Amino acid sequence: MRRLGAAGDGVASLPCGRPCHVPGALPGEQVRVRIGDRRGDGFSARLLAIESASPDRVAPPCPHAGACGGCTLQHLADAAYAAWKRGLAEAALARAGFASPPLAPLARSAPGTRRRAELSLRRADGRVIVGFHGRASAEVVDIPGCLVLHPALLAIAASLRSFLPRLGVLKREGKVWLTLAAEGVDLWLTTDGAADAAARSALAEFARVAGLARLSWSLLGHDPDPVAVLATPTVSFAGVPVRLPPGGFLQATEDGERAIVSAVLAALADLPEGARVADLYAGSGTLTFPLARRFRVLAVEGDRAASAALRSAAQAAALSGRVVVERRDLSLRPIAGRELDGLEAVVLDPPRDGARAQAAALAEGPVRRVVYVSCNPAALARDARLLAQAGFRLDRAVPIDQFLWSAHLECVASFSR
Ligand SMILES: C[S@@+](CC[C@H](N)C(=O)[O-])C[C@H]1O[C@@H](n2cnc3c(N)ncnc32)[C@H](O)[C@@H]1O
Image (cartoon, rainbow, N blue to C red; front, side):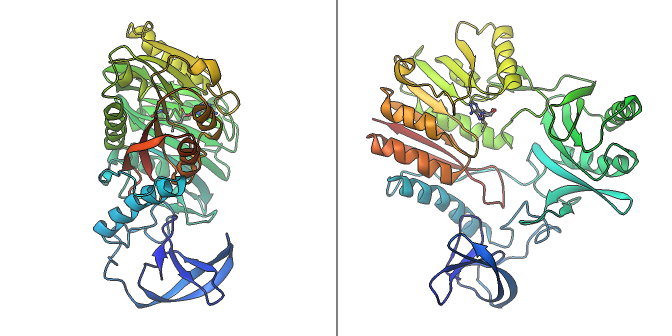
C-alpha cells in the first residue's frame, strides 16, 4: 500500500495504474484483497489478509472496530494517526494554492467526549439496534461499547435499547439525535410510524425515567415536536446562555469548540475594539458571542430555529446593540457587494458542502480578513482556491480533530490581503 487516502483507506496502485482503495490497510503493508466496485477513477477492494504488517498497526481499542463505520482508523498508531490527520489539512490547503501552509499542531479531543451524535435505529428480531451504519453499508451496527461518545449519551442509548422494542411507532427504522446540554441530554427521535396520544405519553414517561432534559419526536423527514420538556436545554457561549432548538447544531466536543473559538479569536486579535465583523453560518452563536466581547457582530444563519435562538439569547443578554442577527440562505444570497463595505473581517463556518457562493463573493469584495472554519477539507480546498486567486495569503491554519479515529477534520484557516 502506498498511502492513506482522504477517507482513511489504504491506497495502492494497480498494474493498470489506477488507484485501489482498501479499507483497513495501511501504507507500507503487503495485503491480499478482492477487487470490488469502481470507486472514483479506480476501484475499491476488500482486505482478505495482511501478508506483512506496518509497524504502525495496532490492535483497535473498540470492540466494534471493523463492523461500525463510525471510526475507520483505530488500527493506526496514535502518532501516525495524528500526522495523517494534520496532513489532510496541509494537502487541502496546498490544493488551494497555499504550498507549505503555516499549520499549527493538531488540536485533539479525548475519547468519551463526543457530546452530540446521530444514531440510527433498526427493528430486528424483536429488538431495536441503536448504533451507527457499517462502513458504506445500510446495515446498522449496535455500539454499546463505543469509545468516542460521552458516557451520558451511551447511557441514553442503552435506555433506548430497552424502551424502543415496546414503541409501536418505530415500525422498522428511525433516527435519534442526542445532544448533551447543561441540563442533561436533549433527544430528538424520528420514526417511520405516527405517534398517537398513547405513544406520546409513553415517550414522555421514558423522558422522565431516563432523566432527559427534553424529548422531541417527529415522523421521519419532519421537524421535531417537543413531547416532554423537563428542563429547557441550554448551552453557554462566552457566558451567554442559548436555548438550544431540538436537533440544533453544536460543535461535537467541548475541546473542539474551545479550539475553534480560540483559533478564530487569535486570528482577529489585532483588530480594534468595536470593529464590525460578520459571523456567517452562525448556528446558535458558538462564535457570535465570543466575537461580541470585542466586536460588533453581524450574525447570519439560514436555519429558522437556530437564528431565533441566537436572536433571543442576544436580546436576553442585552447584546442587541452589538449583535445583529439575520436569517438568510447564504448559498442563494451570499453577503456580497456593498453589504461587505465596512466589515473588518468575515468569519464563515459552513456545513460540509462548503460555501462556494459566499467564498466567490468574498474573493470579489473589499474585505481584507477572512477566517474560514471548515469541517470538510475537500470543500476548504475548493473555496480557499477562490481566495488564493483573489490575492489572499494564508496566515495560519489550525487543524482540529473532533471526530477521533474518523476521516473528518475541522480546520480554522485565517486569510488576509
Ligand atoms: C457547521 S455549522 C456552524 C454553526 C456555528 N458556527 C457553530 O459553530 O456552532 C453550519 C451552520 O450553517 C447553517 N447553514 C447551512 N446551510 C446554510 C445556508 N445555505 N445559509 C445559511 N446558513 C446555512 C446551518 O444551519 C448551521 O447552523
